[in-house]
Image 1 (tube, rainbow, N blue to C red):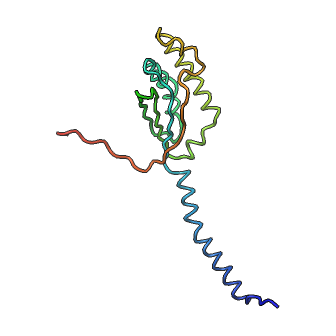
Image 2: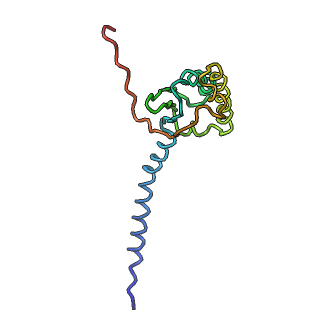
Image 3: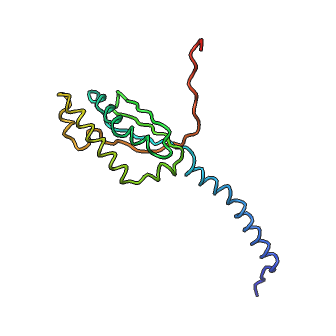
Length: 161
């Protein structure tokens, strides 16, 4: 005959387990909330040959710039260029991951179509880049990711100001 644990001990063990799970939930809920509500930086790398850098910047300003300005949660963006890799790096800051991910894919696709058309127009003016102007996407995406935004360092003040 096997011995059964007393009912009180079983009840207390279940109550302890329930309490541990219940106490742990707020921390877990906060962690999930922080992932969807905290600031985030969208990171994009696109192929940008050296001779086409001006056309890329022009196309960005003509298409993505105004579109991003209208998006809820958009805080700003930085456009950088890596000469060694011949890539453009875009860092797009969002107030929250939730706001960024709430943008419908159809709107993003429409903005991308406008960008590609603007890029082809800008490249068509440069005889050295006409081959790129015929590409479906003259500046193809190399990498897309996101970065957790943990701090912002203010710019240094100039001497005498």
